[in-house]
Length: 306
Image (tube, rainbow, N blue to C red):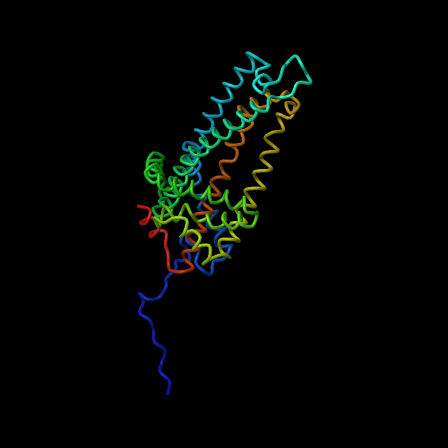
């Protein structure tokens, strides 16, 4: 005679709240994830966009205005400065640039780009940490957070995230140098890095383990986020440049100044909602893939952030 099935005690049963604002249960699918993105965006878009603007866009605008202003002043004062810097003789149309000078300019440009990239990574780390904290806190409490409090949290958690972000960027670069597919694999492997650093205090290894455990969940949703980002970003880029189409045929220095002082700032501001969508979407992927292994709630996520 067989034994009756053993009923597990209530505390043993995995419990999922189908109405949790951030955590999509294992049977929720893409539809559940998308619906939570929509609800989270409606609830937290003001806070997230404010954080992105203050911590990331505003510093970029200041830098662009400073650099663009300096270039504009130099070009207006001396229209031939670019040709002379490259080693051309402005009076000789057939003159060739000085190779040694071109190499020197290239080295300086690469070094400047690296410095700007490292600094930009810190601002991005502050932004993502602050926005993640704001999203989770508002979902857990139902109340809007203060901007200063969110930015303070972002600054406190930024150093660890900054270091992992720089290391991840180097790893991604090496993956791209290997080939497209290794680069894509590394990009997917780093998809969960930011939330893993913030919630679990772990790094790149844990991010790749999460990918290996939930390749389908992370991969499908990452493609959706990247697809939306590319489509919207391309359309915005075309639309924003229409008013400046007449300047496309302007001399390179003039176009560079206009591009730095007008087109790029407008694009950065217009794309603010898209940046918020990417942060929210990535956070909800993280919550969903964790829920595949064990019960998870917004309250638990809030407690882990601190």
